[in-house]
Structures are given as C-alpha cells and as structure tokens.
Amino acid sequence: MPSDASVSLLVTQFLATPALEWIAVLSGLAYLLLAIRQSIWCWPCAFLSTSVYVYLYGDVRLYMESALNAFYLVMAVYGFWFWHRGGPRTSTARVRTLHWRWHLLALVLIGLLIFMSGTLLQRYTNQANPFVDAATSWSAVWATWLTARKILENWWYWLVIDIVSVGLFAHRGLVLTALLFVLYVVLIPFGYRQWRRSMSTPA
Image 1: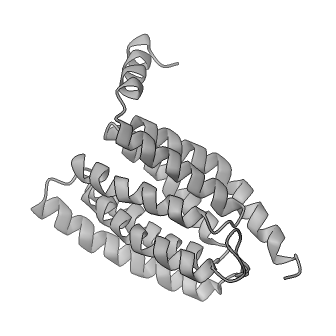
Image 2: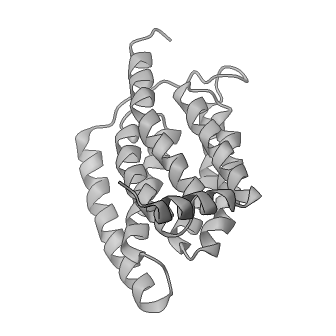
C-alpha cells in the first residue's frame, strides 16, 4: 500500500501539471482512440501531441524522447498521406502482417542502436536513464513505421514500449504523461483486436 506521503506527492504533482502537458496528453489520448477506429484524424492529433512533447521531454532531459517526437511529427504527416485513400473520415488502406524475419532483423538493429546511443548519451550528456530512453525511443521508431503502414504487429511493440515508458516518465516527474501511458497499455489490446478483426472484413 502506498504511504500517505507518496499519495500526497502524487496529487501535488498532478495538480501542478502545466497546461502544455495537458494539451499533449489529451491530444495523445485522442490519437490512440482514433487510431483504434482506423480514423485518419488520428494523425493530426498525433502531430499536435508530439509537437508539444518535443519541448516537454527536452525540458526534463529525456533527449532521445524529444528527438523521437520530432520524428513522430514527420511520421504524422506520412501516416496521414498513406492512410488517405478513400475519404476524409476513415482510411481504406488495409491492415496486414509482416513476416517474422523482418521483425527479427529489426530487433537486432534496434539492439545495436540502443547500445551505441545509450553509451554515447551516458558518456557525453546529462541524459536521464540513457539506456532505457534509448530502448523506448528506437523501438518506437520501428513501431511508428509499422503503425503508419498499418502493420498489425505494431500493437505488440507498443504494449512493451508503453509499459516501460510508464516508469520512465513517472521517474522524471511527468505524472500525467505516465498516467496517459497506463491508459495506452489498457487500450492496446482493444486496438489489436479491432485491427485484426478488420483484416477479415471485405474491402
């Protein structure tokens, strides 16, 4: 059971959450809910959320996360373009799967990038949690690409990334963002099921 002091600290941090973080969190939640429904409007929400997080993560010395969100900005534009096939509300780009060899190759490459970037960040910067931040960031680059291309397995990557991210952001004082990622973890199974079901639906 959490102590009264820890609960009081959590409440204080929650009430002190700046308006920018509220904007990022609410638009980030809207992104996931719309992505589950395969609505193309998830990408403008992603663009808004990540543009704010570029600043917020840099401010708490999570430089890999800040750079990652700059990448998200580009991918939000790409995702909107790729999904935009049949109309302004939903996308007709079909959900598909990727051969396991591509996943294995991606995981090996991600592991190498984590080791190299984590080592550099630890040696030359004041980066907080360099290897954890590098792990979530490089994994999210791959998962974002899979999401933009409507690859079903993206949900499994996000599940692991978001579980780790809850602790990472809570440790850096981004309590509201940590709670957002708790919601992500809860919603991800619904997203996976919805996307998998759509694969058997006629185009």
